[in-house]
Length: 197
Length: 283
Image 1 (tube, each protein chain N blue to C red):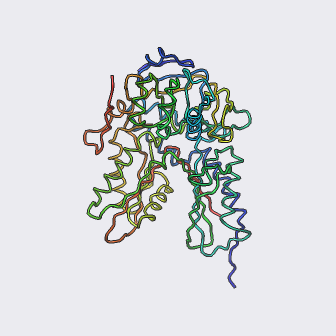
Image 2 (cartoon, helix red, strand yellow):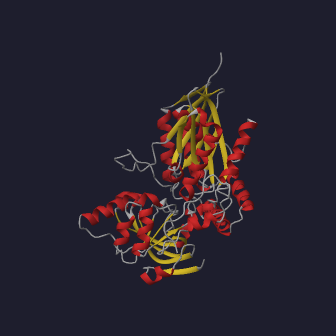
Image 3 (cartoon, one colour):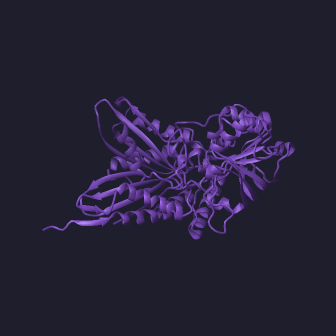
């Protein structure tokens, strides 16, 4: 495991160097999108419309923040559960998105897409929304304002702490991490990843 | 002549508005204690790092009066209404919803409630609240508020087991539910279990078990022992804080039970995350 400082947008070369388990700190511009925004973006693409941001090397954060209090750039902003975006993630990666941030397990098709498209799945700490908001210095709604907390926002972040769960070579940090601590007589063993370095 | 105590529903609105804000800003002492115990038990460095972030997080939330988690939840409002109490001044359901709307708006909390499961339009004031009234002896009103996040609720499960499955079958289902939830539900978890009743009562038992102070055992020593047995099994899974691997996957298991039909062994698992936001007040 390494500590890696990354600046967005991400390049193919940067992505290829990251391995599952790496602690990464993201600085630059990232975009928020969760369930409703993903559905609209994928519908927009199907209708021949452009995405509300340049997807090349982009990072998407699955978050629906709380409203900012006076003086805050953004309210609390921890990750939401990622599997609900599984249906849309391969499409977003095909558009050039290089990393997504959320929490929790991904489906097999999405794990394969990270390898195929050369992209990363990061997790930030769920439920640590007040802490994670400290890394956000600016927030602007760029699309779907009617969705409220679910609108697409452009965030400026400084050293947003994340951990790489799935890398571009099939690594799976949930499996690697849990398999070190599961007791031999546990009723359920973690599922082995289908691919791995 | 006996005087019946009266309580104006506006007082209920005000208290609920305060409770939803406080629940989101300040982690209750039982949860702070449970996280402290997790820190003393966790051996995985990455697990320790996550737990340290959680302490930093709830400290910021409390100091700055901001929500500890961006999912400020659905407002679950449990009303234990004394049967000798007379509620006056308006509709109780409306008063509860008014309190939730006020608290979520004033408190800069997130509006997560939709008007309809398929139309999916945000109601923009986090109502309707989910209201659980019950009648109890006395002339007081006890209000318990739980701001329940969606991520952990989505990982909850219910099963109508055959009686032959017994405790072993129930235990297997409960542990598998927690394993499947993994990082999705934001562990370390509080695991609420209902056993018995019927299809709907068992889910309510699981939910009610979460209202207990975290780590306080079931009053029946037999069930208290089963709670410990389940906690031990769950913490063998290796899920750890935020599913990154470790010894502490759950902070506590709470079981609530009731009798059931000769054909049935209903079991429900209601998963709660480490940001377990519950508050209560007595009027």
